[in-house]
Length: 125
Image (tube, rainbow, N blue to C red):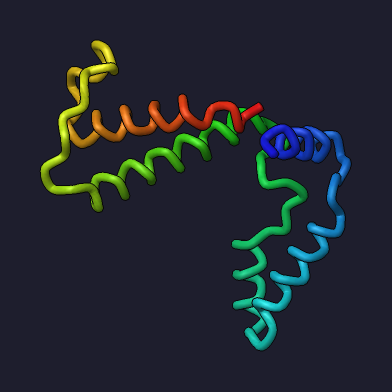
């Protein structure tokens, strides 16, 4: 899946649309959003929702993917801190010096993410 995203972005950067049917479907979806709007509103919606040949920036797909991944992890950490128990358990300090300044809930999140990564790392290959 990740390699497919990167390949599609590189191809788009070279002027090739890997999945034209998906682009056409996205275009149709956006057009359905603007039906019944005034011309000015249509232009605004169409400008804010461009049809893209790829989910990643073709000029820098790997960096774009990494930024999205880090945003996702940060969002998960916020949700974890919001919904975790009020008194988190103190995991053992596996984070090293970088975790010394971390809040207890943040450290717990990091440890749990690392444990999950170890357990499910085989799915990545």
